Length: 73
Ligand code: FES
Picture (cartoon, rainbow, N blue to C red):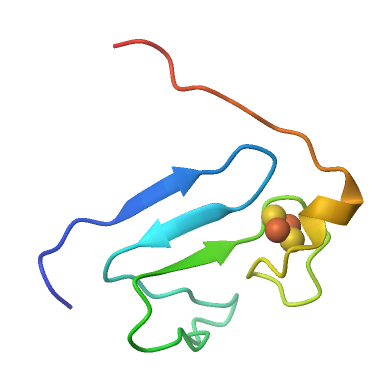
C-alpha cells in the first residue's frame, strides 16, 4: 500500500465514495475484490444495494435521503 491518504466522501443521498489505498474486509477478514485501476469505489450506506458492501445505485430508487454536513471547525 502507498502512503497516499485515504479520502471518504459522503455523497448527499448516496454512498460513501472511497479513494486511496484501502482494503474492504468481510466479517471473517477476507478482502472483497476492489477493481484495479479505478480511482475510487462506493460503499452503500442506504442498505438497499444488492452488491453490499458496495453501492449499486439502488439508493436512487429507494428514496434514500441523507445530507449530513461536518461541523464547522
Ligand atoms: S448507497 Fe447506493 S445502493 Fe446504497
